[in-house]
Length: 510
Ligand SMILES: CC(=O)SCCNC(=O)CCNC(=O)[C@H](O)C(C)(C)COP(=O)(O)OP(=O)(O)OC[C@H]1O[C@@H](n2cnc3c(N)ncnc32)[C@H](O)[C@@H]1OP(=O)(O)O
Ligand SMILES: CC(=O)C(=O)O
Image (cartoon, rainbow, N blue to C red):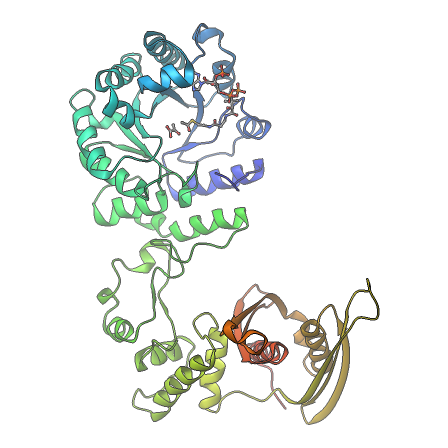
């Protein structure tokens, strides 16, 4: 898939994770296609349960299978499983390969027969099977029967262009099971109509007993069928055994996130089963019922797939959201306490001004704790001033911040420079706090986002700043600041970030 490039170390780590998770077969790449895949097959990681497959294509036209360089590289990987892709759509044989239909059948039969002599198990990936079946049913069937008769253990029906719909998949697979038993059939789907998962489930319903897919659905164009959705659906909804145990399934979210981490990209929040929003409840009506019984708004329990429930506080909230979030952060409060309603009203009023507590949970916690009177005042801001100066054309702009604050009863004045005014302000605040709170050294700001609200008001628009921070143990939290002035909004988010950190560290305000 565009944007995905694995190193050998990535491939080894992913193979180990897939093995630990409990999949049966890991297709590790195409020996002979590139140095990365060659290096991976030269030193595959030790696997406890899964078996390794190497992928390649049928022999070239006019060569013998025993004398084909592509097949030689494939056999050289010495994997227990060999997967061979071959053409089953007459149009593809004629146009993409430029060979006669008879020669294509011979390429399939010879290659599979040779692979059967070389490996424990041979799979035949029947490329474009569904398109081929719709255009020339007899030829598509002849092609898979050639592979079957030559000893392929699995005939995997591929929806290569991803354009087949679930009812078509179900009907076509049902017809194929009249020629080849379901326990020798597999399905390989693509997601070009967003039906990769639905098509796979339809194929299983019609009888196939192997499914191919990828983690998080990565793959050519719009992706392959997403195993992260298929596996729990087969197990938890359709009652199938997949080889993954109930305990293994609890590693589903971890497995999905491992791939995103290796790709250095943020996990999709809305991903089924494993996304951060998959069990996040925002609407007051939902939360009020979830508080009584989570099954009211959850199709499965999040723990079963290693995910967690999350209650969001925002202007869509009711009292139940506030009570649940307070409980999550360890604040035990009588549900009838009038301060609960006051916190809710304050959240709604502030969200109207531009705050967003969905995603800035540390700021919500501080707001609630302040209204309950339990946040120490670690520092008190008297004033700040920032300057941005460019001394001449072509010179870099310099920023400087001056800060006056009271820390533990002492009035402190600091000045600091930075590559921008917010950076300078951050440096000035740290300089003022460090002598009193040395732990601030361990606080890192990892992300800073500015969003302009009411952009129709141009430079007079309201600005929302979100800051994400991290402590030495890797815990992260987000805070929010809002103002007509971007520097002031930034200071609000920065001050919350530091206060939240000191509170979590158990610092005393003195
Ligand atoms: C359906 C699938 O998604 S299969 C997986 C697809 N994945 C990949 O293609 C990734 C790895 N591929 C590669 O690195 C390269 O394409 C290689 C090394 C396999 C081949 O590279 P090259 O020899 O330079 O050929 P190129 O990629 O340009 O074209 C593919 C050739 O294979 C032929 N071919 C395609 N499918 C088959 C098949 N099933 N059986 C035999 N030959 C085939 C094509 O006709 C073409 O032949 P030509 O070289 O005579 O034109
Ligand atoms: C085999 C394969 O990747 C496909 O046909 O989509």
